[in-house]
Amino acid sequence: MSRITPAGRPSRVLALADDLSGAAETAAALGLPGRILLGPPTAPAPDGEALVLDLDTRQLTADEAARAVGAVMPYADGGLVFKKVDSLLRGNLASEAASYAGGATGVVIAPALPVAGRTVRDGVVHVHGTALHATDAWRAERGPAPESVRAALGDLPTRVVPLSVVRSPVLALSGWLRTLIAKGHHPVCDAETNADLDAIAQAALQLDPSVRLLGTGGLAAALGRRLAAADGSGLRETPELTPYRPLLVVVGTAAPSAVAQIAQLLDSGAHHVPVPAHLLTDHRGPHPLATTPDGITVVSIDGGGAVEPGSARTLAAGLARTVAEAARDSDLVLTGGETARRVLDALGVRELLPVGQIHHGAVHARTADGRSVVTRPGSFGEPDSLLRIARALRPDHAAALTPSFVPQGDPT
Image 1 (cartoon, rainbow, N blue to C red):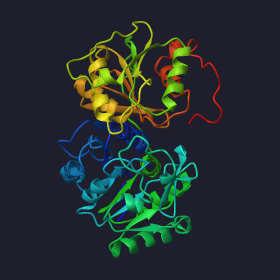
Image 2: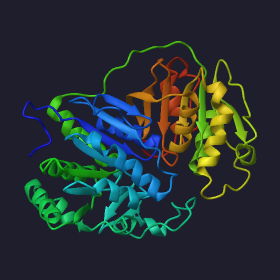
Image 3: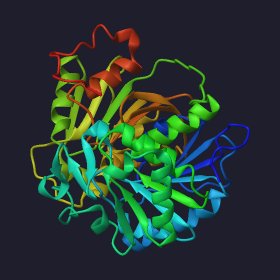
Image 4: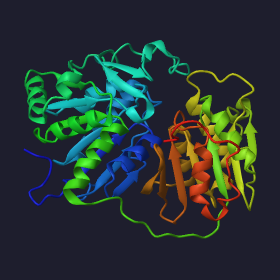
């Protein structure tokens, strides 16, 4: 049975993510009208819409994360179900995948993200051609990177679908997936290009609706291309409310790329407030700051000292306390899913309406009161990422926000 209704309209979609930047990336990639909820829903998504949930499980224990996933599965209600995973296989992947597979006929798994140089070959994630476990991509994690997708999924029974099969005619691919699932295996699909992900999405949509999908924003985008083609739909337009507000950029990532991204904003006149990590982990109270009323304020973790692995949640909570007062009347740019969630929690924001993407992973959304919120995974973006976001949110000031140099290559 197809996931597309006889009328040619996509059925409802329930999508799950383990952090807010991932949820926003998924919503924009699907490209359907819908909402991003910061927490569990109260009802299934309406027909033709996507309900994307930030379950905020990245820093929970494995058991807690599994329970959070299981608790929202009743809201699938017969629609298409997609679980977004980190393209570097971080988080509680094994426990969440096991919970997600419960009650499903099978799960089609495709964790490649070609736009970010993350591919899957022979069931192994590669980052710009190097096997994930041979890179330093897990330098801030508590343990070593898994050597394969299968290893990351723990006890979940899987079988690799090689590129030769992924690139075969779609009926052959869907038959291969169906056969593996019938034998009790969850297919892990190799993919190196968006065309590979398109083929996987097309084949998966031909399977029984009780088959679920698990992958990155790349697979979500492939699904979006198929569903939107069936319906002609896209993100719902939101009112263009434009009262002037300060622009507050909160950088909650320790990724080395953040330094260059901040530097380009500073060269364009932004005000920078680096906060020492020891102040962010001080729970005695907030450390308030003031934004620049007529410009852009950037708040980040001071890179002068080492950041302890596993301290992401504590640092993000400290950043949220620091910026909470200033953020109440500001448009926001929030990098790092943990930071984005903690800041919006401090503001009491429970729902976002996605508007679109400024560049891959940098998702523009609006709050109920019309404020702009841009979220972006901490590890994403070229050196001009934050500058591009600022120019998109402040087009009237675009001439002043000019990069100090032109980065090499395509910034997307």
